[in-house]
Image 1 (cartoon, rainbow, N blue to C red):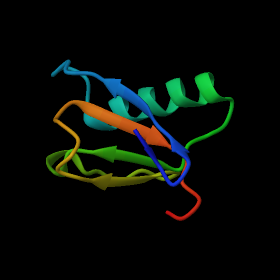
Image 2: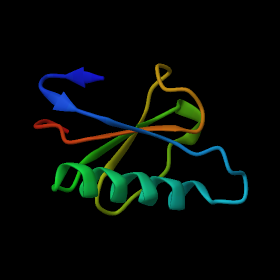
Image 3: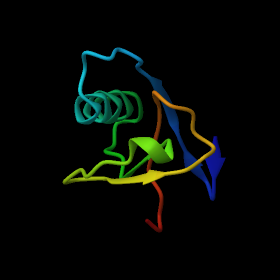
Image 4: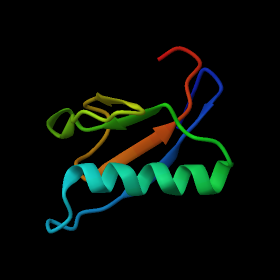
Length: 76
């Protein structure tokens, strides 16, 4: 998905044994490794919104459960 020139990496993890915050961390790591820059936003399903110290985690009904769209937006 691209919005306003934003490139997102879609990350999927449905392992119930892994805490949600660890899944977000894994997705951030994958994005950083792929695009050589740290993301500043993670889009998740509205039921999966959580707090993170370094990136904004926003809920949207467009993202299905266990999916994480990681990106860098100019305006967060």
